[in-house]
Image (cartoon, rainbow, N blue to C red; front, side):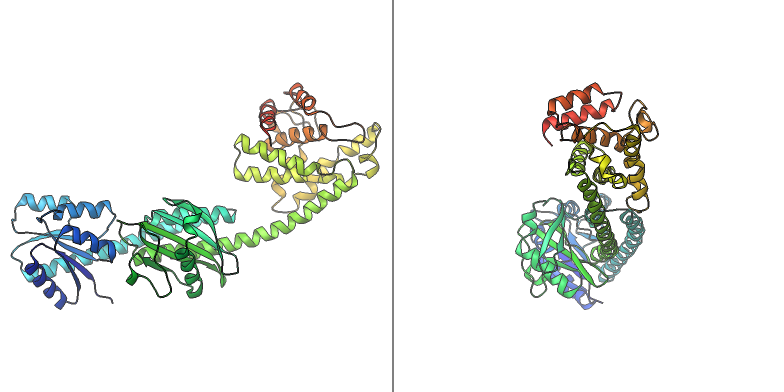
Length: 479
């Protein structure tokens, strides 16, 4: 086991040296500082496990040093020494955050016992912290497992990682398969993508990929592994962790703390590494699912285009309906999941027309009752087609009801008001507007203002009034 590193802070150099020699004989690694300012510099430049500080020193006192350590998130036990022992002195030191105190002249056995006890208590505290974080990690992984998109998962991973180790900032850089890295997400104090594209970070990502392990990079040269470069000015340390699953390297999670703060500990590294290992599996699974989904959507998009190919007047209709409805959904502030549903429902809303004769779809004259009944079948046909595809099944209701009227006089089921799914009510407005402003076999395209007027006239009858108002606002502002 690596020797614990102690820092002795005392303006009495002789006393500092004697205490240092004694503790060295007990197997500790010892550094010395002869002022509070020098102690701050050492704490910022190298890992320290315990501080022994005189309470009264010129300039920065032991109490001042304690307060600075607390403000800078140095979670290190501190033992205070004093040559003027009083109850008030002891209470003051403990209130300031000291673990314990002892008086001058020293009793060496007492010093050894208090140092050992403080380090043991710190170890127990860290073990308890590990247990607490493991419980928290379990809850976090359940949350991550529920995220449906790779980008959403990466964002959550970054947020949780920052909180778990109290990092000041972080970023996820994804690999492109050619030893290059693209910034995917940033959070915290440094959100500028250019900052994370610095040479030091990209080299760290390459090192993590080559060595397939996590690493802490300090601001000092001796705190860097061979081949790594100095991290940007203003940083105390950087933690770089691999995102990898099934022997496939996905990218790197970078976390940093600013100068003036303590360095990351090995415990921090272990906790976040456990989180990234779980998250990497989820990211890979989501990407596989998204690939499958995209293949499905490519096929469905081909079907949509096939429908439009049957009707020379509706080329681009579904794409436009999708575009209008997505803009409307964003304006109305619907959830990301609902937005995705209406996006694809807009593309697929007329998929049922694949089962309708071209002669009916392209007929330039008025339809007979029988022909119109055939046209009215397309929402149900479309819903039937997509309901058997698992990830498209949530869209079936939107496709099935996009010709329902707000007053209950639409088809296929005569639903009214909020009985009609919100997405279907939105599609209804977008679909009708796009149809009115496009050329059809039985009429020329209407001017936009005429279409707007008809939408207003049909508020409360064919359309949801709230959605019409929102749609007009979106269209007038420009999609």
